[in-house]
Image (cartoon, rainbow, N blue to C red; front, side, top):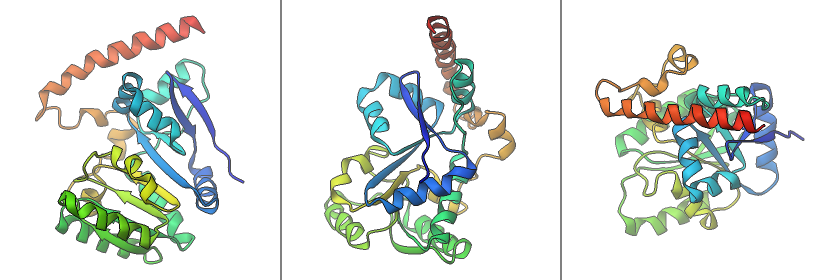
Length: 245
């Protein structure tokens, strides 16, 4: 049985799952007949969870919480905690798809514009021919269509429901509709289908390894410089926790 350790970092939970552990953890979740919410958390997400109790509760109830930010990993190391493995979101999803394919599992794709989701589905079929895509639906749908969509997903009973852009509530949508689904894995990522379809570039490994992915779009969105104050606050938090410990 694959078991991953969960740590609490600045009151936010993270799971320690490296490359060697992931397949065992996924297979265990698929085998136990329960619902499993997988969440990929950036630095921004973690800081939001500290001030938003509803969001933090959602993270606490998730089966797998994976850090994607170098700041989180460095902060945990600074506090002397066991360091969680950091994953690039796109690479994590690709690895997850590979595990599902190896185990002859299925996926339902939900989100993106019609042309995007269709291209993404075609590209996924080409990359993972053994992965069963049991359904797909674009986002930005009318609210009255949601009941039929939920029924279709429940009937398809996918091993993984992968949710992307264009869904009301974004990251909250999965948690809101848990009672409408059967068992399986559930994961939301805003840009996944656009990247699969080649409509958006994924962060380069070099940029990501340096922890500079948050600087993307800085020239077109200069107000993101204000995030610097958040990092100052983060550093002060780490110092306070370090002194207390």
